[in-house]
Length: 247
Image (cartoon, rainbow, N blue to C red; front, side, top):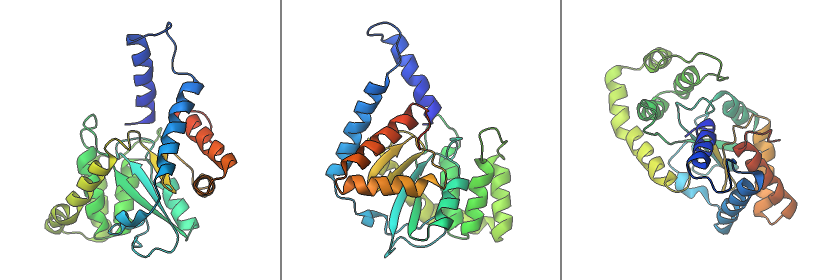
C-alpha cells in the first residue's frame, strides 16, 4: 500500500464517516498513533535471528553479520519503493545489512510475480536482481518504468540465466521467502516503504542514502532509553505519514 493511497483513504474515511465536519486527521492524531506503535516496538527486544537465511542487498549473508541488520519492506509496484537510494546506503555503510522484504498486494496485479522474480534472480546474481528492480521502479516517480517482461529479459541477459533454471528457482526458494514475508507482515506492516531500524517500524519513510544511517542512530538511541531520540523518531515517522520533510 503506497503512501499516497493511505492519505487518500484517510480523506475518504473522513468524508464517509465525519465526526465534526470534514476534517482530515490532524498531526496530534497521527502522532498519537505513531507514538503507540513505537512504544509497542520498544517493548520487544530486537534480535534479527529470524532473518538468518536471508541476504543483504549486496549479497552478503545475514548469518553472523557483525553490524546492524535493517529491514526494507516494499511492494515492487510502489513508486516510492526504489532500489537506488537503499543500494547507495548499503554500499556506503559496510557495517549495515539491508534486507529487502515483500508485501505483494491484490490492488497491484503484478506485485506477486515481481517479488517472486526478484528473489529468484538473487539466487543467480545480485546484480541481475538489482537491474530487474531498478528498471521496474525508476529513481523518481516521473521516470518511465520498464514493463515486467522487459526488465526480466535484461536480468536474464546480465546473468546468462536459462529460463528452465529460473523456473526451478521460483519454486525452490523464492516462493518460500515471499510466503514468510506475507505472514510476517500481517498486522505489523501496512504501508510501503517501511524500514525497520533497531526493531522500530519507520512507516512510509522513503529515506535517501544519507538519511538511513541518521535514522538508524536515532532508533538505536531510542531503544537505549534516550528520550530526546525517541521524540525525534516519533516526529520523523509522523512527518513521513503526513508527507512532510522528514530530516
